[in-house]
Amino acid sequence: MANQSAIRTPIVCVMGHVDHGKTSLLDRIRGSSVVSTEEGAITQHIGATLVPIDAIIRMSGALSRVNINVPGLLFIDTPGHHAFTTLRARGGALADMAIVVVDINEGFRPQTIEALQILRNYRTPFVIAANKIDRIHGWRVHEGQPFLKTFAQQNERVQGVLETRVYELVGKLSDLGFNSERFDRVSDFARNICIVPTSALTGEGIPDILMMLIGLAQRYMTGSLRVTADGPGAGTVLEVTEERGLGMTLDVILYDGTLRVGDDIVVAGNDQIVETKVRSLLKPRPMSDILVEERFERVRSVTAAAGIKVAAPKLADVIAGSPLRVVRGGNRDEVIEQVRHEVQDIQVKLSDTGVIIRADTIGALEALSKELDSHQIQVMRAAVGPVTRHDVIEAGTIRDPLYSAIIAFSTPVLPDAIDALADTSMSHVSIFEGGVIYQLIDDYIEWREEKKQELERQRFEKVIMPARIRILPNCIFRQSNPAVVGVRVLGGKLQSGVDLVLPEGKKVGRIKQIQERNETIQEAEAGKEVAISIDGPTVGRQINVDDELYVDIPERHVKVIEREMLDNLRPDLRETLEEFTAIKRRENPFWGK
Ligand code: GDP
Image (tube, rainbow, N blue to C red; front, side):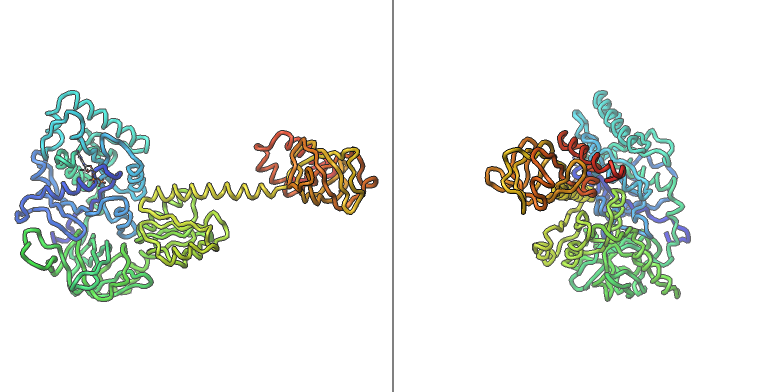
């Protein structure tokens, strides 16, 4: 495999809705290993499993006559969208291909659709595993067989059910803009998505799914999969873990070149670039060596694609998801620049105002921010790591209350952040935590809608409403300072504190108080008779019995009512408003517009 332009092992990630069989499918693929000493056996890597081409050919039997030059498939052991979006290589996805698992009996679910959207965003080729075919009523199991072999041995009814279900998937995929077909009917792999009926439980269809992945790699990926196998290594950090006797280590997927003991490497720390030297490279020990105490086997070098544990000094601060690059032949500055660039280049669009986002890795942060962007939700700050006290305080001071939120994707909230949240001055801040992006976004949007309505309610409560009143005869309780008179509310809603005008537009004074049966009230609806005290006028001069008066609504309030509230306004309020604006617009036709 060490010749100059070897085709490297493609990296595969398994995605799909929860419980549709991702883990089982991976387990089945791993478990299909023949005795591990045999040539071409499946081998366990750090964080990944290598299935060599020989093993695939052996499993697929009749399918083996294809001319193949892909060396095998490296499956990332952690299934799910998070792994896919988190693990990145040179700004794209680390996985070269994906399997989207969908329970053939349940069909598409939210995370199936999310997986497809992610794969489309990243332009990653994929196959669909239409899983759990053994659950179709009446299915006869043919353990580990290729699909067409077992399908041919099912009765007509079972075949019919399977076909119908596959077509339902074809329909759903078509709604999302993907052309697809059952894999054995696909002739153009670049245009059609293959649907492979499988059972992770019985192994039926597993050989086919492996062959389809090889086919995908072969047909339109070999260009990008060509690597110079002895070039300097490039990889992605899966995890930073402490190992007994080794100190801090990095679990790395190497996707390009070679990594050797003694190599100078560059990785990204939380605040700065970390340069260090590889002390040892470790692989998991095969299960057969159970007598050896050490869990890992030391190797001198590894070639892409591979999963490997790297022990080296100065790793404590390294962030998961960071790129790892080997410095070789005097390109140190260039390599540092590359790593810095890749980390800074996380394509998170930041705005002056917006939510604060947190995630456990760089890739996750970017995936979250992309989704937020597609929902037009602005982000003010984005960072890797748990939610801190500082985040809460910052979210609390954001001007727009609809952005006083922190979205934490697959990362915890620190105790002092929770304490800060308990402070009354921060009671308007919300934190959304979770491991599913669409759920987090839905939760935030729901919260924002509620908050928006609440703010609207508060604003409308402050708006001065129209009202028309008439001064009643025999109800002059006081002439002036203030004048106290009985009135009838003819239309609208009379509130205390408002100014009154005469129909010709002349100002009268301000209502100090409204009383009904000697009780002070804040407002009186149309039809009510109440006593009001008015600062300003004297009865008999500026106002008289039987005068009709209007509430003098400020221009700015009229604008709010006319633009935002008119549809929900009671007819008498609306009518009174029209009468009032007609008075104002006699002088200035554009008043309040
Ligand atoms: P994940 O959440 O997508 O990783 O799903 P799992 O692999 O954990 O599977 C969820 C459940 O479905 C488990 O109980 C599995 O045993 C079961 N399951 C998965 N694949 C199959 C299958 O092909 N056939 C049947 N009958 N059960 C399956």
